[in-house]
Image (cartoon, rainbow, N blue to C red; front, side, top):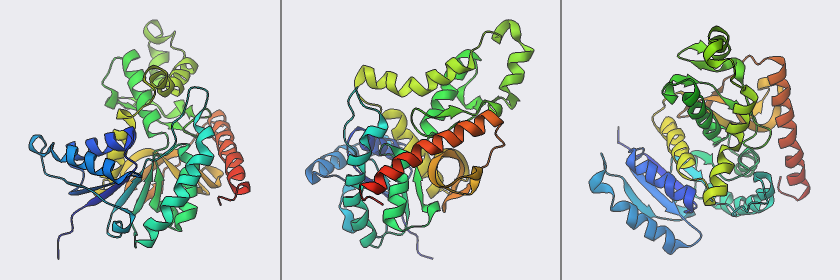
Length: 320
């Protein structure tokens, strides 16, 4: 059997796309990495710059600038383009401009013969992932958004500072919209396999004053703290994209909180929202349905309603 190199394309060479590319080559995620940008010369410059990293990485990745016509044999297309956000906006305010961008991107990629997996980072990511699904005509499992993967990582980092352990020893998920209606599924947060609620109740002298509502708010605002200080977030989400891509290409079956299109899971349909899912060569192999408590289920339903409201607006402006 002929060996086929793993091939990834990144559309959009802004800060997120560029940091994603840097993470991919340093982690040896694929053998070929194609960069596509509205300004081709900029994609070429980034490809040249990144190619000069090869002497210092564990393996060689062929990095080059390309275009939509060359996506036919690509395994994963990562979508990062979007309008810049100012401090008076939230992610949902970017919806109309992001949809317009996607309408100009998805069709030529599909026309190239692309039959791989779309991975979306463009905000508002839950809505744009749904739009990409509709525009592409691909099965729902082959369109994934970064969702609450970065929020879940932020949660683990925050908890690791309070319950002093390494962040990877914390397990738990932020669910719902990658935005204001997200929430922490506290009933499923564990540290070293031990439920967080149990740790707090057994050690009141150490952790009795821990305010979970405050920690949830800190998690929700973590991205805004970075944005307000430097105008963007890029390293964390760039690595999240590389992590999800590696899980796809290596058929890792990792469970990651991503934007997945629901079809009955959690009692929801025709909506894309952040939930844990098994990520494999098939994309979303399976949505993991956590047994949420009543309050958590209500929060998830509310978050879905927020997304649906904006999807309705997208339909009104003729995007669906």
